[in-house]
Image 1 (cartoon, one colour):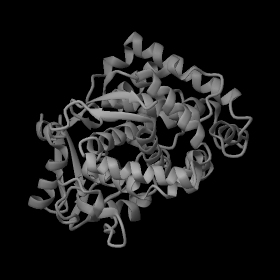
Image 2: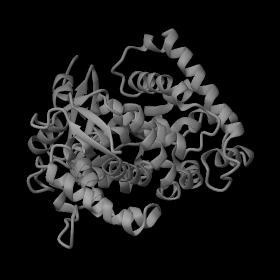
Image 3: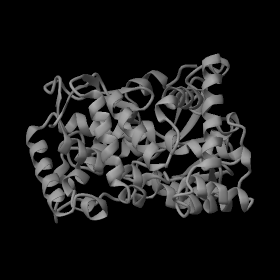
Length: 424
């Protein structure tokens, strides 16, 4: 009944790596009576990218989650032409340029958050979630809405709904918890209010004007709006904050790396203090982000269902089988990276920077359901790191302690705390 669950909870990436090496590129695991087929290694992700649209579907994985919010259509559960059209329309609101055009606003958000934590010691995960949440509120143009009023509601609904309906690790009765139901009602109303009122100052590529046009054109119904209106938070708060947490935990363990990063930020500020050109000068910060994504991957698996029977690596996959790919484990394999357990940003710097093969380092997945906000998430981490180095003196409470992972529910640094002092 329990199957591979204890091993997965203890060391999920290691479990998939050991399975790949001992059993081959396709094998099965069992969690609480459920059998899942694993397409391991980089070739598994490449297969997902090439054949996923035809042979696999995400709808059974996410349909209950989507229906919780009263809708029928959403990015995570859609496939085919509708999914491609919705991605095309929403892409401008979640692109890299969304942040490039609003670096001064992000700087203001970081300054306000630093002032709030000035002189305090705080868990790194709490600090990064606070930063990322308020940055997303600015980037998504939540004018007239106090984001702090909805922070706890968003986290409760996000974690409970995903853990119950998608991961299925939490009991179903939590969906009837009055605290969850109140929180869901509040953020659903928030999504509708934002859809109706926000974004007139940014009519071309703002999220809410785009959603309004989708409804006017008949691509979406109004019932689909609440979930799509808060999708950037669901997709970004934990994932971006988790990556940023590992970036800060790694950087503040290494004084020499901090010094090199500060020099880079100072040079970028002297040349161009904000915008696209400023970001393109942060080469080392980008390498740090990339190496943190590789060494401390936050995506455990990507789950799909087989639409139809097919054969993979000589093995029969049946219609309805749950199929997993393992982007996180791939980036920790010696098959693709030298000394994979070593944190070494230099592997991505300069003319000798490595170029991983497709599927080896794809932290946001591959294929038609690759995270739409991946480029925005990357540049958000890079910009936030640069701004923190510029604006504050931050130190790790226990820099000599090894950096370890915990799962809550995403991977996060275990027990790390930061001391925050705003630079005067």
